[in-house]
Length: 339
Image (cartoon, rainbow, N blue to C red; front, side, top):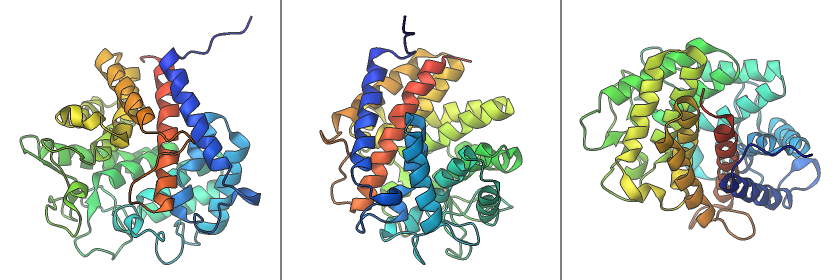
């Protein structure tokens, strides 16, 4: 008799959607896990090894990871498409450090210690001693030493993946201070400077700088990723302040109301909710996972990808890998049950 999978029916639909995304990606790959020239860019690849591995496409995941290592890994431990992070300027603007973190975690899966050492040392050079946060870009890119909460959380995750707790604890405490400093604010600023002060005026579109809960179409991924990291940090450290911080950042998302579940912007809301559901057993987190998954599935293209209006082809490829990864982890986390 075949054992039943530990997923309910909605979760099976999530995995089927993720499999369609993986098929869409695989159909575009040539020999050696290489995308065609118009997509051959770090921005297209960096999330796919972790997604494909989680989905069980192990051989394909490794081929794509090896392609990233061969074509984008630098001698000083960075991942870049060239002098620019990517041909799409959005990556250099807001995600120069963050893109590295997915491939650093993938290196841990494959036990590549030298890659991990060089890549983590690259991140260490971007950690700001005074705040514990991580620079959004390379050292010297921005005189105010800007750090954003997604980059801080992503870099913390990379250190957790390699079992290096101290840099992750510093990042976690930085994020707790950012949260505490804005508890009563009507909006929420994502950026701090090298002294830990909020940066409310930068050369960025408002939605990439602030969360304004009263408005639709906000960048919900910022508090979502931050809550996810803090929940993972709680599991790694056992320190209750990080669970409280994860719940605090989740509550910040809840202030956004129904608008959050329109389109796929709630993807990381569902991810952090899935981890919090596993930790606490609280049904409201499980409901949030199901709502996020329904919103994501509703906008998947029949051919498997998630199109992004007005975006570059590589950003759409990035988003498709991200959605597939999240849907897979929603199922995996909820199948694990509360701890």
